[in-house]
Every structure is written in C-alpha cells, then in structure tokens.
Image (cartoon, rainbow, N blue to C red):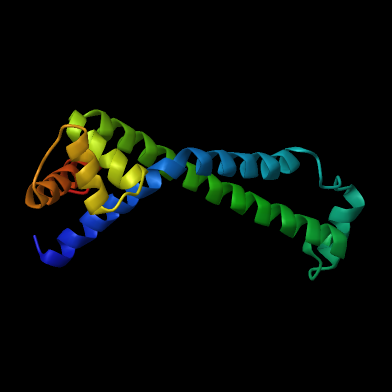
Length: 164
C-alpha cells in the first residue's frame, strides 16, 4: 500500500471519529429540515389544473402547461424543494450508516482503546494530554506505544468501516 493511500484512509477514519459526536445533532437538524420542506410538499400547494388550461397549453407552446407566471414559479419552487428533500435523504442515509458503523466499531474496542478514542476524538485532547490521562487511569505507556495504539485503533475502525 502506498504512503498516500495509507494517509487517505487514516485521515478519513480520524475525521469520522472526530465527527462522530456531532452525528446525532446533525441528523436531528436534517430531519427537522426535511420535515419542514416535506410538510409543505405534502399539502396541496399547487392549484388544480382545469380543462381550459390544458387546452391553452396546446395553443401556447411557450407557456409551461399553459400556466401563469405565478404558477410556474410555484412549480419551480416545488421542484427545488423536492430535490432538496432528496439531497437530505441521501445525507441522512450516509450519516446514520456512519454513526451506526462507528458505534458498532467502538463496541469492539478494548477498554483502553475506547478510553483513548474518548479522550482523543470525543474530548479532542492533544496527544500529550491523552497520554497523561491514560496513565492516570492505569494505562501507562511510552510515547511510542501510545502512537502504536493510535495506529492500531484507527486500523480496527477503518477495517470495520470497510476502508481496508
């Protein structure tokens, strides 16, 4: 494996671990936005099309379905809203799957590794602070062992996420 490829999965896994603590709130925000948009789409916001309008559409090819400017703006707004709902749905699927995968991967870590992930990624402690706090909690290690453990933890999570 090339060094560049290794850096890519390593950085991506670390980014996901840093972002893990924000997934629940981000999911709630996206769900609320989706509900606000989809709620207005579920209502009957478009006027009913009459037979006269459909006949007029055949005569006037420039007018979209023979509608007025206001109706065309409404149609365009509804289409934009539907596309945004689709984007939100895709984002929700990605965030929920990442959240669940990281949660499951963290369940498979040892107590020391889970403490490391909590200190380094959830609490965003520096490497030195994380080493000191791990030592205080009964996990003494050298700087070399700390970084080896970091690499092993990231590899475990990346393997579980399918990056390796």
